[in-house]
Image 1 (tube, rainbow, N blue to C red):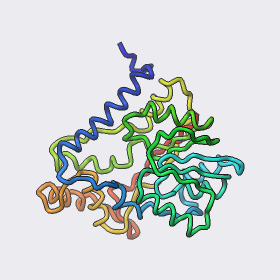
Image 2: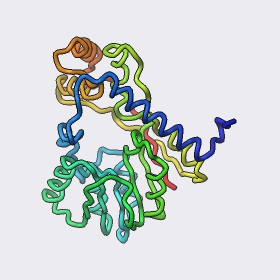
Image 3: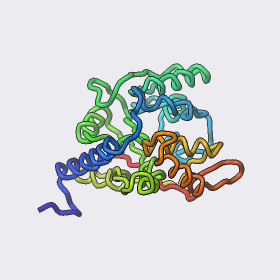
Image 4: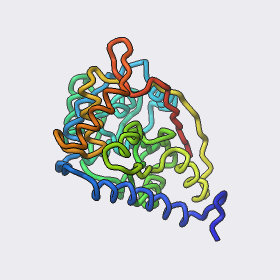
Length: 273
């Protein structure tokens, strides 16, 4: 019998994988559109960010942890939202990213800001043979089915590890639309709480810092609808899409020329081990 308060590492890893599979299989069953070869290509430009920005609580915390002599490994670096500012302070950053579109944004940021100490690896994690002082994942892991090998290689690659995850996955803001367009609740992905349980089950005792961050907001209502379509996999113009469009516009809230589904702050955890 599995003790829910003290699961074994095997049980925790298996449950994480089960939730990721259930989430993915649900999409495959109800989707009206296929994903392109690079899922992030349509939204990669949105991941451009000023590496000198001062309005990001997570970035401020990460900056405080960087030492000039260190090499950081950024797994799932994306367009460089954290890779670029960390590289300004660290000796080197190794950026691992599977999306070619995201890497194009990262390259643009390196050129624009004159940052040259980033070594890019185009591929998925795990990657063997990488050594760093600190390994970092930010909003990566929610949908990683093979989380055991993922973390094991992360721990082999660096003596210090840092993971930043939301209390709920970033895309969960769109989960409320699933019953309206698909007639069923969205299968939830694991997130911060499950990640902490997983580390404890693997005999890792993390230090966890909690932050509150602003919710995502967008420049136009159409942008929110576009993202809602991506997270419900409905075809524009279909009956499901018509229901989705009505629901999105009913729930949208405007503030200072920006649009959001909610203005409630989000809880973000930063686990170090």
